[in-house]
Image 1 (cartoon, rainbow, N blue to C red):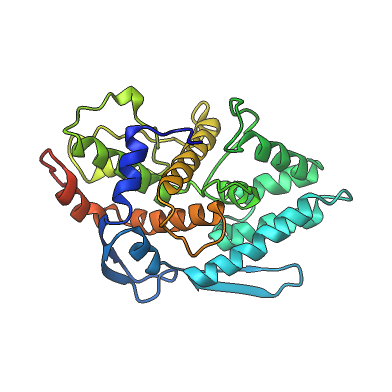
Image 2 (image 1 turned 180 degrees about the vertical axis):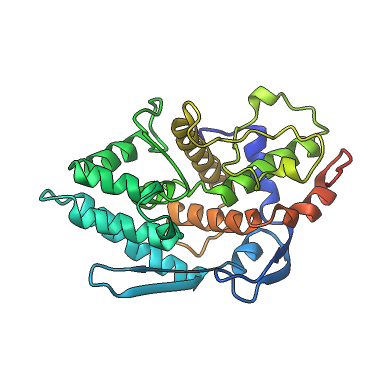
Length: 301
C-alpha cells in the first residue's frame, strides 16, 4: 500500500521514464573526463553514472569503483561489512573500521578527526558507536510510525552510514540528491502553474548553499536550506531522507517497469538515488525539463 499516493508522487512517477536531462559535468578526479550527454528518462541518466571512489577493507585492501555497476558491487560489500560488524557483541572496533571505510568512500577522510570521523571516533571511545547507529537505524526506518528522535548530528558522510546500514532503501540524502529533489518539487509547482498549496508539498531542503535550485531560478517556491548546527538540523535532515525514501518507494511501486532488471525494491530505490545524484551534480541539467514542463516563465540567473 502506498503511504504517499498524492498528486506529486503520481506526477513524479509519470515523468521519470521520459524526463529530459542534459548532463554537463566537468572533468574532476571524481568524474575523470567529465560527462556531456543528452538523456531521455531517468534510466538513461543512470547509464551515465560515474563517480571514482575507493575504500579499504579489513585487510587494508582497496576496493575501487567508478561506473554504476562497480559502485553497486562496492556498496554491496560495504553494506555487508557494516551489517556484520554492528551485530558483533565484543567491541566497537570492527564497526568503527567499517564506518571509516564508508567515510573514505564518500570523500570525507580528508576532514581528519573533524566532522563524521570525529563523531564516530568519539562514540567508539565511549563504547556507544554500535548502539547509537542501531538506534538511529530504527528511528529512520521508512515504515516507522514514530517521530524521528535521537539523531545527534548529521552531515553528508553520516547519512551515507545511515543509508548503507538500512535495509529498506533509505537514500543517501547528500547535497546533490537533496538539490535534485528540491528542483523537481519546483518543477512540479511550475508544471501546475504554481497553483499548489505550499504546505501540502513534500519538503526536500537543500543541505548546501551552492546546490539549490533557487540559486539558478528567480522567484523559486522551493528555497529552504538546512543550515549545519542550526536548531534541530539533524532531525530535519534525517526526516528529509526518510521522506525522500517514501517518495522513491511509492513512485517505483507505481512504475514497476523502471530499473526492473534489479532485484528488490530497495535496490531499485538506490538506482533512482544514483540517477538523482548525477542530476544534482549541476542543476542546470534540468533546463530541458523546465522548458518541457513548466507552464510559467522560467528566468534563469
